[in-house]
Amino acid sequence: MTATSPGFANIKDEFERSQACSYFDAEFVSDVGVFDDIKVRFCISEDKTEVIYVLDNGTSWVVPFEREYRENGVLSLNTLEDGELIRYQKSKGVVKRKVLGRKR
Image (cartoon, rainbow, N blue to C red; front, top):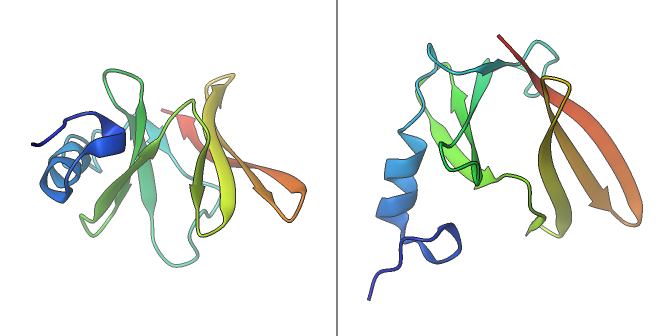
């Protein structure tokens, strides 16, 4: 049985969702150096449940939007504030705020 909700999606579903955003059409651009050597842009899914990261080389992946998730022991939350895509991360009791991208 294959579920299509983000929490229970299989790898093919996740790949297809990540392809929904084009680097050239992405609504958020990163001018703050999220990654050192790679340019990245962001889209928010139509249903507002996921953020899609798209690198200039065509690689893309999906993370949750507007809900907390844990990855490699770090608690994260992606949200919008005043036209900016913000990521909050909590590691070892310390919360850090980082601007991922700004709306075009």
